[in-house]
Image (cartoon, rainbow, N blue to C red):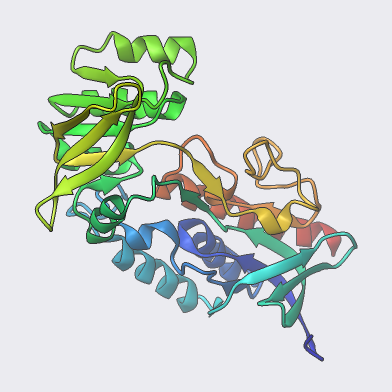
Length: 315
């Protein structure tokens, strides 16, 4: 344990659009925020090649470029952006405590959580290869569907999100093939029925992904296996979408904050407030519906404004 305890007005845990936006607003409010970037500085967008739906960049921008710009803007106003991640917290008392890599102890008057969520993937080597290459594997149809306009794609998943994303892709792509592991959807009846009624969506039940096929640079197809008959089939496709859920990065908060059954932090509706006074949340750590950079930035702004008002009320 560190012999010295650092006391701060505002500690921001995590980066990404939510964390950096919170830092911009908190800095401008003279809250002198300290932001720890986490294990993935810049968040999920640092793995995204092209971002075309971020307002103000008509020609599009890469995810890493966008995060570099947001960080620079936060630092311009005085945010103290640091490497490192929080490994433990204690919200049981009046003082909010956090430990950086189990060593450095920080006491914060306010804490803003922007730790995000991590998309779940199948874990196939071929899937990870083309994901890392940016060559046709995605976990966000709304983010990346535009790049596959008038093309054929495959999507894996059986829940509401998978059905929603398949329906979204059907408006852009000539053909969408859904891979469903069991003999029925997990989605609500209305969502499943919407997919079944969409002419250019083909559904393969009792089917699993065997391998993502490609030319070494981009996806060219998907080999699937019927888990009842064992028959292998190759499906031509330029895009492979995975919609099997996200895991919020919130495990270290579970002893103190109210989480839903999946692990998303519950906020008081219409605010960024959690059940612990002085602790706020922004971005995908609390959002299982939209999961967009722009909504994350908006809730990061809300978190900083709520934190500012919390401090003002204490004076």
